[in-house]
Image 1: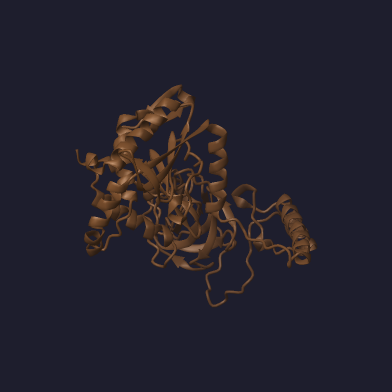
Image 2: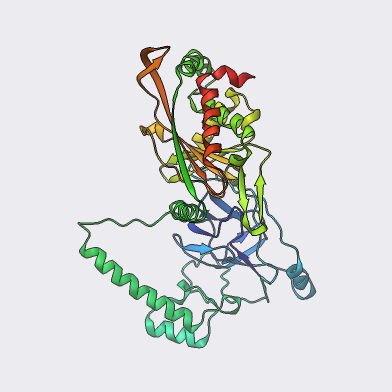
Length: 428
């Protein structure tokens, strides 16, 4: 009996992935839970495990190919199952095999995977199956119509590289024509690129970069952006951080100003529920969150990711520092999981860490707001009628004006200012 395993829906809006590495080859035996392929999605890199024990009959896709959720990954020949047993297997409810950890650097683990749909069973056949692993170069025989095979031969196309769209993924003449057209267009592009090699460079978009582009457009299209700016004088906070950073270093923790800012934002969100909400137009309602989960935008070599610290209002400065340090390491090593990225209610972006002062951050839609943190710098300020050197923290707040009025946005910033200019308030 043949079992078709499709690229599973792993949640959080992921619709496609790029094949980074195949761990198996045609004719190889696999057990349930064995890693089949390493996939790069827009959020994480993950190993996809086999849901069944059997022999790999067909592998779909090559390294570098982008495939959609529910596209076939492999066909597995399952022994000793036929007749009524096969029909019962086809009726089984979808399973969720355990994720396979990836040990090497630069990858992550997905928490939930689903197997192929209920109709993903083919009758037993030896077509496309190679048992003898000593003959890796033996020609493959794939499912294809006679017309498609003839066209592939005429066009000089390796039919084994073509993705079928017919019943049971059978290759049709339309698939061959599409493969021919794609090859022709690629050659035309390559010829153009070759003539301009000295002028431009080409790089394939990563899944993360493609998703960033889509999300930014969706945010600007769906939310009514409004921004407000403020400067805070935080000399008291600077003194507290300088006093305790050595103590944190002894605990192998790097104490920055960010944990204090997260704590101040979390406490302020408790008093301004519109900033911790989202609009549900489909159901004609507002959704107000009774928990505070703050996402931190992290700049990595592979693009922007936003891990989420849960229940920030209930955490100590030490706890927040520990989680920031942990997420920074996981983000740089691409070891963030889907659980690390979900359920955010508000977002902070810290462009000040690389020198910026003010910006107009784009809301992490469908959230209601995002706070941008600028570079702390010194400049003259007036205190008690005297001019002194102050430590200035610039803030840029963008909100969805459909949800948050200007007055509410200003009051929210004032609450953050109250906590950061007098950090002792955060203890009460």
